[in-house]
Amino acid sequence: MNPKTILIGNDHGGYDLVPHILKLLDEKGVSAKHVGSFSGEIVRYPYYAAKVAGAVSRGEIERGILICSTGIGMSIIANRFTGVRASLCTSTYMGKMTRAHNNSNLLCLGGRITGYLEALDILETWLATPYEGGRHDISLGLIAEAEKVLCNPGGWTPEEPPR
Image (cartoon, helix red, strand yellow):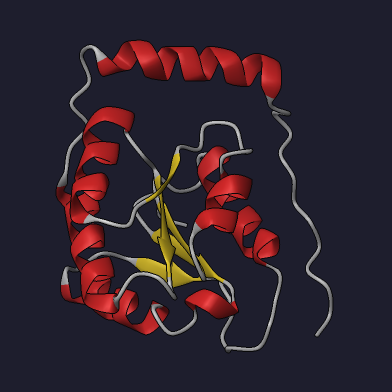
């Protein structure tokens, strides 16, 4: 897979937002692959978060997007993966700052709390904002140092249950 391809994972709560995101990415010429739920039927978000966050952690892709009802659950599980800096964003300003200061590589959105137009603005800003580096490198270095002690470098790859 091309490292520039953006993987999109979602559960039932993020299902309705996915087509809007795929359309925007296509219009911008950004390669994307949907690896989430393809319906509104109830599923468990950790399976989809593991697909996307695991790919980021292993260096297979540079960035991903996760969507559940609020984005909270996805961000919790995604940030358990080494090297993942998943950011739950509910405003365009948050999307800008998490890229500029945290070099966020995984955007989490709430499909039932953020309207699709706001979500698209957040995504566009997150995609366009470069990491500032400089003084922010110190904090990212501390995060990497903590990960060596706190995180399992082998990751977690659960088998998705049959439907």
